[in-house]
Image (tube, protein in one colour):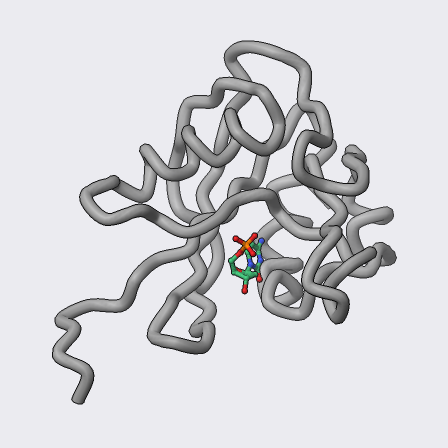
Amino acid sequence: MTGRTRDREVVAAAVIQGRRLLLAQRTRPPELAGLWELPGGKVEPGESPADAVHRELLEELGVEVTVGERIGADVPLRDGLVLRAYRAELIRGTPRALDHAALCWVDARELREIALVGNDRGWLPDLVTLLGG
Ligand code: DCM
C-alpha cells in the first residue's frame, strides 16, 4: 500500500474546431519524441482537472480554453497516475508550440494515419466520432 486514496490525474485536451482536432508533437522523453498527443499534463495538488486543462493549454499553447466533458476511457499510467481526456474549446489566442516541436490540425482521416503516442491511441474511435469521421 502506498497510502494514497486516489490516483493522480494527467489531463489531455481534445481541442476541436470544425472537423479538425489539434495535435501537438512531443519533444521528450526520447522514446516519445516525434509522436503526436493531445496536449496536457499533470493535475497539481489542490487543482481541479478542468483548472489543469486550462493552465496546461495556457502554458503549452498560449491559449485560453473552456473545458467541456470527458471523452474516451481512463488510461492507467505508471506510478499511480491516470490519464483522462476532456473536450476543450478555444476562447482566446492562436495555439503556438511553446513546449512542443510542432502543432497540427487533423481531420478524421489524417488522425487515423498520424503517429500518436501509445497512451492516446485508445481514444481514436471517440475522437474520430467527434470529428464526424
Ligand atoms: N501523456 C500521454 N498522453 C498525453 C499527455 C500526457 O501519454 N496526451 C503522458 C506522458 C507522461 C505523462 O502523461 O508520461 C505526463 O505528461 P508530460 O510529460 O507531458 O507532463
